[in-house]
Length: 388
Image 1 (tube, rainbow, N blue to C red):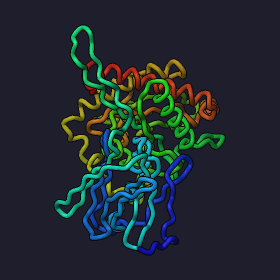
Image 2: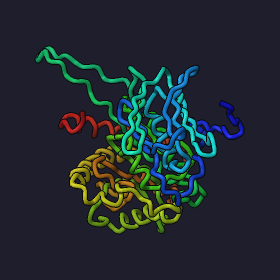
Image 3: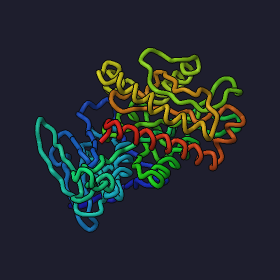
């Protein structure tokens, strides 16, 4: 086969790189590709379209190739690729490009030969991809206790999804000295991801690693598509009064905001998609139906408890605007089953806090406090057998 190298302009996924999807127009109604994962494998589902729908392997180096009909390529797929690249250590690179005028190609470079299980049904090709002996993270070994002489099952590999707010064309709040919220919260999120891994052995992924825009409903979907156990959205918002200061922690409310400040902040955050996302009306079922889910009340209760753990650790490094976990209708928290919390680390519109937010020392202190809160919450959930 002759390869048109001019078409194969790969955009490499990695630190500091930007992943750009092929230009697909929303008017096309071909069923979209779905990319999901659990703790063991990556799952892909795509419409069958002859040679434009294929999943296969190549060697030297070992790779998984996913060919997709161009009309079926959803822009949100690029965000899933960012997640799986962080989630699975056996995926060393992820690339995407136009391969032919009718085909988009994803290449996953892996550490060893991948195992692919495929089936075709109802006009779709589904495939599960894994590297034998590898998983999301090293499994905690089973433990035999002397008292009971029973083997305790290994702990479930947990996944925390960290969501740095805003990004790309959405700068978030802007401080008086020109500090952008989107940059500050990404830095805190990166610190948090590192601290969770090195200090607590907790695996975490970011919804974005670079300065890119992700619609709010895509952020919620990512948590479900990749089976996150916790979702934490990090912000540093602004207010009309530059004297307002302090950190705040929010969980979802089904009945409106609990305070005027919570109402202002949630309205400000929720307006992002209407301003920056031209395709906002395609919001998925998580946002449309979440408040009708039978699990919602229990999830909100767990989110409030999660928020309490975060607030009790944040207050050790920074003062709180409100010491209690507040509630408001933040769209990014509308997950039916995953405990989800939004943290306003400070008010970037406050002169003193803008300076603090720009200091790496403060960013690291805040990240450490959040990591400790996540760790104590997960430990408590394990004791109550709410987690594996």
